[in-house]
Amino acid sequence: MHKWLASIVVISLSLFTVGCNKKTQPNKDSMVPVFVGYWKTFASNESGGGQRQLYVSVLEGHTAKSSIGADRDGTWEIVAERLEIKWKDGWKDFILKTNSGFKKMSYAPNRPLDWTATSSAPAYKVDGPIKTEEIESTERESNAIRTLE
Image (tube, one colour):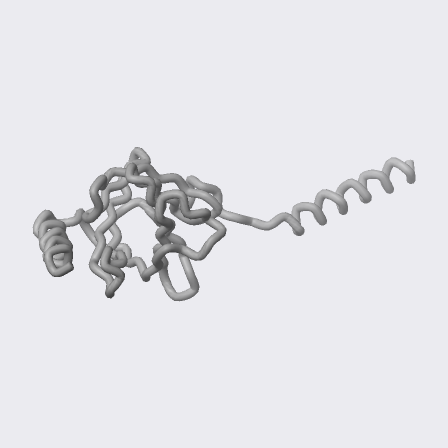
């Protein structure tokens, strides 16, 4: 009887210890509401000087749209508590939560992810879809920069 009771106590303590040591991390599904929506951030100018506004729509169904770029469509998934967007032109963007808010990191096509990001900027979740006039304004700014080069 004592061996049986001792075995139960040992097993109970083992399960309790394992449960206490297990890190609690949010699952992917719980992170979806954090990232799905509309984002305002910044992208480096192609000429290398300064940054321009960038709007990103992270949509249900794991699709994404950007206000700038030759190919504005992409797909997204949540990887290690951060949003990973793969754009059709080969670029990858990550939006992650930091102590001070959100940050976007961009990697050029074929750039290894363990290298420093090609560019990074703060990211802000905004209400409502991106307005067409904001996208057109961003396009006009991009075209004006290209004309100056």
